[in-house]
Image (cartoon, rainbow, N blue to C red; front, side, top):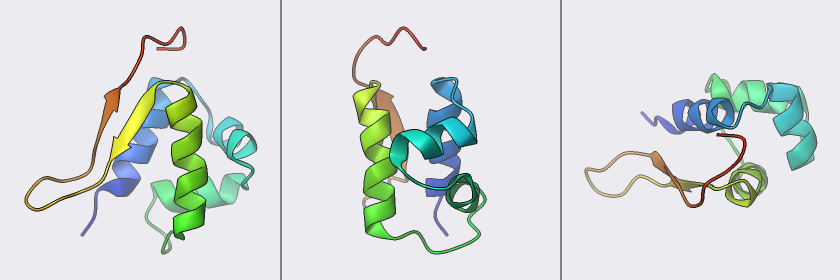
Length: 82
């Protein structure tokens, strides 16, 4: 089981973005963001890259699971939104 969906929601919340705002910034539907955050569906790599790009541009980097370490996030710069 992955915790990727929880990290996406945490990053979005940290930036103060609504699902709709994140969707618009990533060029996706708000339903897609909902599906990611609630683990409703398999997430395509292209879709996750769009979401990660929005976060990266705003100072949050998502870290993929590796070995015994799970998904995570870290702040790459001081953002006025945080």
